[in-house]
Each structure stands twice: as structure tokens, then as C-alpha cells.
Image (tube, rainbow, N blue to C red; front, side, top):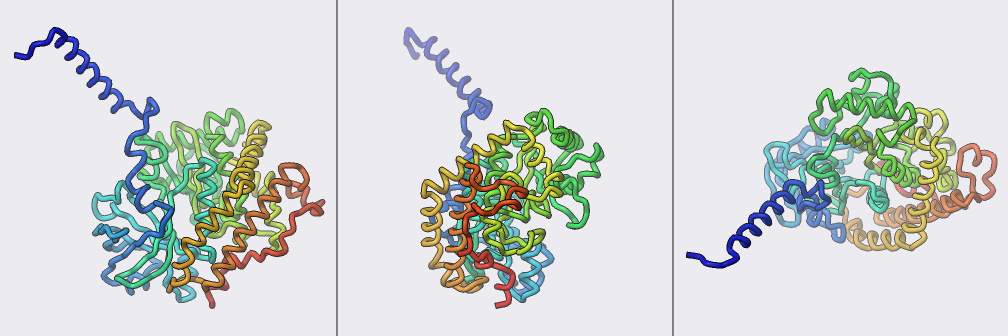
Length: 464
């Protein structure tokens, strides 16, 4: 028989400790304790960004897959990531213009989408889906890599990414950028187990009004927001729809914005978005290429698709299209024409508030000082270039030559460094920061005559 004069106290203490542990397990996230699931295994494996990973695809009929790539249908495959095999995984080609033009020019280098749970419940250490980006119209292989790194630097929830050397059925296929797809794993990693809803607003036809893609409130009817709701990443209810529409209504009114918008996150997003001059985006003519996150009626905008950033998207650009000096000095306060701006309430209605306008400028100062003037950017791109250059040199499906890669890497680096100087001048007031001001006076512009934007990659490269 166990004997101890303090046995009752010991038992009581053990029971109390067990209760505390249970409560922490159940309510840990609410108490600010990071659960293990918020740092998933795939983050330190495939998305270790310090190395080039090996991704092998085993596909029964690769030629048939390529021939029907534009249908974007999934096929089963086995994928081997850094020596570890996963079978019965979904694989398909992805892209809009990139897919169409790749096929038109008789090329086979498609961006790919890999879905671990397409055919059966499965994951790669918690990851449900990722893409392999082909660097279409990006001879530097670094447009998305740099843009996502900038977003991460500004604490904007962003997809993880890493470089991967892809082989198909034992044959070298090329260097691709692996990018975490914003779906369940992404949402859990960034927003926790009880995350909100995630959407990818996109139009059916560019020439439609597409008010919902632009996040404009029109009425309370669900059908008016089809371009949002049909692109929901998770199952949604009528309550979810009503809540989002209410948020858009508050946004349209321009008052009490913090009840409907994660203002701080949105300002940080637009700081990077405006810096990289991404015309194929929310602030461009198309108004798409972003993710919308909603939780408890509060909206956040998340980054996506940067292969045409750094002023390399021509649709809607003023003439001359490749005027590097214009885009190096592109105005940070009116980053789109008035016609477009008034139809982009997530930017326009925030900038009407002096407090948010000042905070936006403060974030620009943070980006320029910490990311560029500190020397971080030059070191980051130099290390990246050194890491991927041997793979680019032997890339059998590359859209460009090895020499063109180095030219593009120089060009994107120079563009960003010159743009940082211009933004600094715009913040200091020595360079006009609006379209109107720049139309009146360009005498203080940063000279960008040494930069030729098409050197970063253009459609003409596909003909070579």
C-alpha cells in the first residue's frame, strides 16, 4: 500500500496539472500559443528556400498529357520530392495566356499544378496543393521569387516558394519555381485551424463590367458576385455570402472601414504591389490576380501571380509601352488612371483617409529603407542567381538562353534599385508622386535609360 503523508496533495496537484494541459490543448490558439500544425512539415522540406529541390514526375503517357494540356484536366501521377515518393497524385497544366501562348508557339514548357488529395485523402506533410511555375515571360526566373519575398518582408500572408529541378520519367525537364497554392494548408498555416473563407475573384470575360472582381458593391443579390463566390476555395453558405457582401457595402461607403477591412494588411500589400508595377493585377486594367480572405466580416487581400510584374504587362499601358523611365518613376500615390482608380475601392477608398494615406507612406519608407537601402535586396538576388545559374544553364526547355538569363537578372535588379531611388524621391517630395504631377514635371525623374524592359522576358522570346 502506497504511503505518503502528502499523497492527497500530490494527487490533487497532478489532477490540476492535467486539467491545465487539457485546457491549453483545446484553447491554445486563443491564448496565443502556436500549435504545431501552424508550422507544417512541408515548410521546412519542399519549401526550404536555401536549396534547389529535386522533383520527379512519373507519368504513364506524358506525350498525351502535353497534347491535351490546354484542357487543364487532372491525370494521376507519382511524384518524388527529394527522394520521397507519393503515388496517385493529381497533375494538370495551369495558366491563362501563358498556357494558350505556350501551346500556340509549339512549346511544351507548361506551368503545372500538383494536387495531393485530388484522388484520395493525402498530403505532403500537410500540403494539399502546389504549383510548378514555368517562368513564362520571365527570363530572370526571379519575378515571382522577388515579389513574394517582398510581400513576406512586409508581413503580408504569402505563398511559400522554392526552386525545383523537375524531371519527367527520368528525363530532365527544367528549373521551375514551386509555389504553395492558397488552399486549405495555406489557410491553416497563415490563419489557424479556425480560418475564414478564401476566394480568388476572376472574370469570365475581360470586357464585362466585372464589378465584383474589383470588389465594388452593387446590390445585395448573391448573383451579382458570381465572380467571387464561384471561385471560393472552401464550401460557402448563404451566411458567408451575406457577410462578404456587407463588407463590400461598408467598403463602398468609405466609413468605419476597419469594421470590414484589415486596413493595416491591405496597406502593406499595396506598398509592394505598387512598387513592383504589376499591371496585371487589382490596380491594373484586368483587376484580378489576387486572393481575397474574409474572416468575421473583415477582408484582406493576398498576393498572387507576378510573372508579368516589373512593368512587363502591356495591356492598358500608356505609350510608349516599354518606357523604362516612366515605370521606374511610376507614381506611388496614383498608381492607375482616374478611370480605373475610382473602380478599385479597396485602394481608392482607403487613400481618402489621411491616417491611412500617411501609414501607406510609412510602409513605403519601411520597404525602401529595410529591403533596398540596407543592401538586403542586392545580396538576396545575388545569392539566388548563384544558386540557380547552374540549373538555368542546363535547362532543356528554357524559354531563353543562358546569356539572356543573366541579362534579365541584371535588368530586374537594376529596375528595382532605380525604382527604390525614385520612390525615395517621391516620399521626400523631390519627384512628383501622382500622374498629374508627373505629366507637368519630369525634370527630377530617375534616369532609367540603361534599362530595356523586354530584356526581362517578352512574348517574342517564344519565337526564338
